[in-house]
Length: 294
View 1: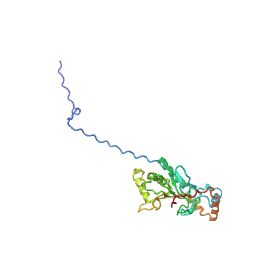
View 2: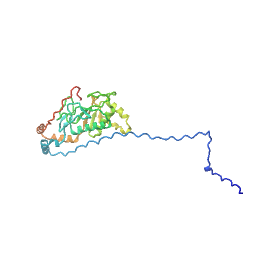
View 3: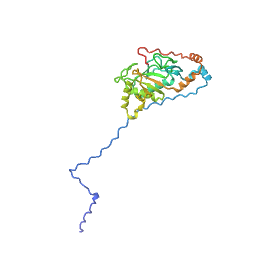
View 4: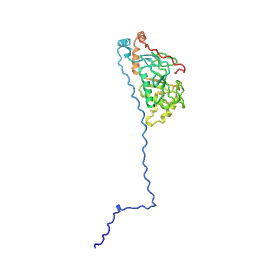
């Protein structure tokens, strides 16, 4: 018989090394969990398209005013504190808007801007209550008691959203203000692309800022949006008397340009033309039962 061959040695690299039973197990490296993604913001509507108008010569402008004034669109004549309105559009009540003033006429761009912002809020916050909209301007503009502005169709008084039952001219406080909806409204107005400034009492601004601070970083607005002691010419500014509503001054370059052209027409000619084309639809009666906004 052949002698048994000795077993081949096992290479050290492949030898099974048994750890003592009392040796402590090496803890597994912790698995880093990535932070959850920030919730996607409700997408805004596209900004309103700013109407570009090629203004005709003065003689042609007079003819159009006489024969087909609706072809010109809205004209903001003069200034918000000393002006008038031509071709205004009336704010109508809807599923999202309640009228709270007797004078809801503005340039078409102003009315569409408010309607757009309310649509954004209702889409992003289903079940939103209707929003009160106060005075904008008279049908043909001009002085509107007790306001200092609201004369040329570019100013609007707009209510806040509340977590309680809303009424017009209700003071906004930490207990009743719906800061989320109100900020969504203000943001939507600004993102519409034609807001010059918004007047909000500083006490309400603080409530909005507290809400903004809780938003994901990507949803927070630029720091220079709100007025600060060292910077006053911001979009959102303080004005006394605006704890119950806020005041928006809109930009409407096309309406202002047309209004400047009207200024070149002799006043007696323009007055006769405008009087001839007054709307047959009467303006709403003034809202009764609450103080009038400034």
